[in-house]
Length: 101
Image (cartoon, rainbow, N blue to C red):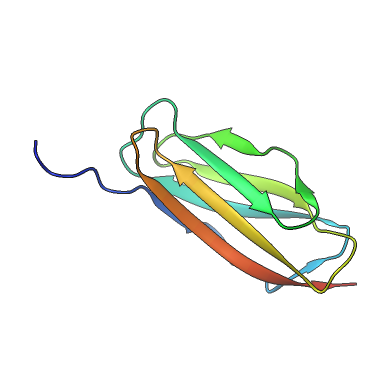
């Protein structure tokens, strides 16, 4: 087929909080869908703190939980979640969270 490959779908599976507690763990859930190769991965990035795992292999239809720890310092933190379908398609979700506590 001459139709271009569609980018994958990446959506929050649950309500996304407005704030994260400083130096506390958090979890975000995402659903992924599309046409994936066996190399499809979800990558996550954060401006402070960190994630339990930096990337996760995914399959179409999966719900993926991402566990992280918010930074100790600052007033906000930005998170990016990138879904690469292994076929050249990419989808990005990003959010800035206020820090509390």
